[in-house]
Image (cartoon, rainbow, N blue to C red; front, side, top):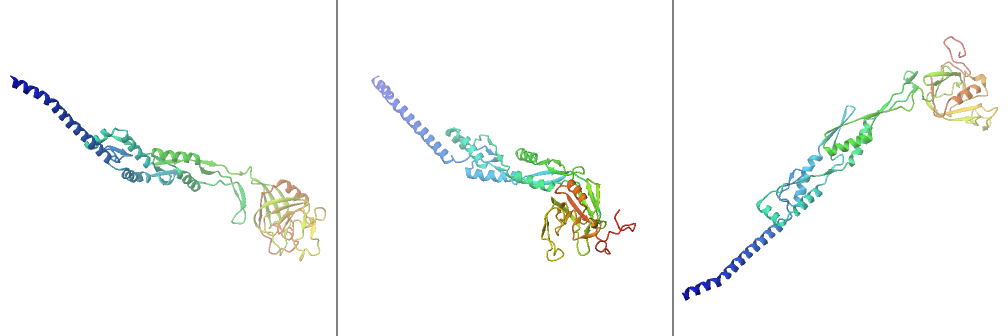
Length: 378
């Protein structure tokens, strides 16, 4: 009996040692596992968790640099997509890249890595060890539209249809042509920029842009008066719109001189103009270098300055008998009372058309030949 009790007491003394030994082994084992797990996680800390996608690209197990490269390569395909722009039946194309769109790859990758960091390291290690996916999908943001404004401006220039002002001009056959006003077309730029930017954001492949009407500056009712000088008949017609409202006899260039044919404009008007002798060493020799406005001034009481070469004027005269004849040095002479009336009717900026030619047979002082054979213009 004594021996049995001794063995029981001995067993009781060994039991705490055994428990302690087992516990120590377990602690060591768990510590080793924890250390191994931590070390494993640290070794893979810079890699994406399994099941991570960015913009549809699987980046599981990739480093940040590898993920950026993979996502960027995929994004190039999106940037190469074409957007077809239709304006009045005409097609234009531009890629998302050309319109200024850019992917925010770095930010998306950092968001994926930050999301992984929010998972505890033990869980991360466990998922890495078991390759257990986290089902993490990060959207790839695409932004930027710096190229939109430039594309719209270029397109606007190509589709613009200039309005036509109502006007009177010289036709190819020597007569007058009358062009009616016509509205133009232009792209609605602000709306076009907005629609293109929306297409970049929502992935649209086709955009239809609209145009608006552009009114002409001058219509037949609002156009400036037009002065038409007929050298072949020595007549000056004043058109308001497309109708002749006044007509006067004039004198034009005598042989050896030219009243220049063409389309010109009125750039200045003067009452009682000063005359500056343009030919002191030829036909103006013996005349004063300057004659102030008033009686005896060769340009009479009014002068209208036009852009034709040779200092050509439409002006009055001190030689009323010359009106209707080929008698000037190129200028267009009128009776003073007539040039005063014209002066009040025609603003600066008006068009002046000189057309026709002096008959080849005409001599200085001749009247134009008329169909009925008379020597004056009716």
